[in-house]
Length: 148
Image (cartoon, rainbow, N blue to C red; front, side, top):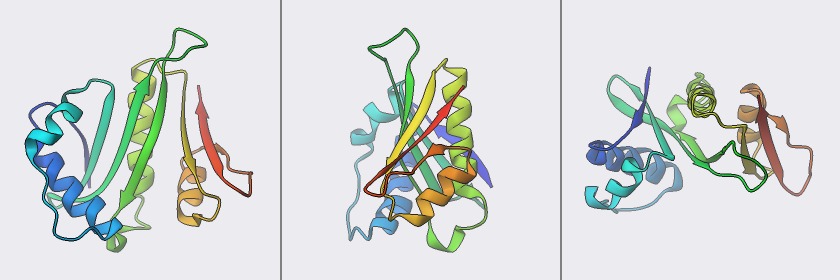
C-alpha cells in the first residue's frame, strides 16, 4: 500500500480517486468529474486529499482541511471525510490514512485535529478510536479529537 497527498498537477488522479472510491462507496451512478473542477482543491495548500493505493489502484481516501482558529495563532485540522473500498477494509488502510493526515497536521503546526461522526456509524467510531482519537461518548453524535 502507498499513501500520497494529491497536489497541484494531480487533478486527473484526484478525479479517479473520487470516482473510483468515494462514488463507489456512496453508490453514485454514472458521474464523471472534470479535472478542471478538482484544480482548486488540489492546489489549495490548506486542503489535504490523501489517496491510498494498492497495486497502483486507488482504494481509499481521506480529506482534511487546515483552518485558522479564532482562539489562537495555531490552526486546526478538520478531518472531513474518510473512506476505503469495502473489499480493502480491515487491512489498516483507513487507520494509515488517518495517521498520515495527523502527520501532516503536526507538520503544519496544527494544535489539534477533529472529526464529527454519528455514534451509529460503528466502523467510523472503531477507526477513530484505533487511530488514537478521544471522544465519541455522545449517543446522538460524536466528535473525536487528537491533541498534541
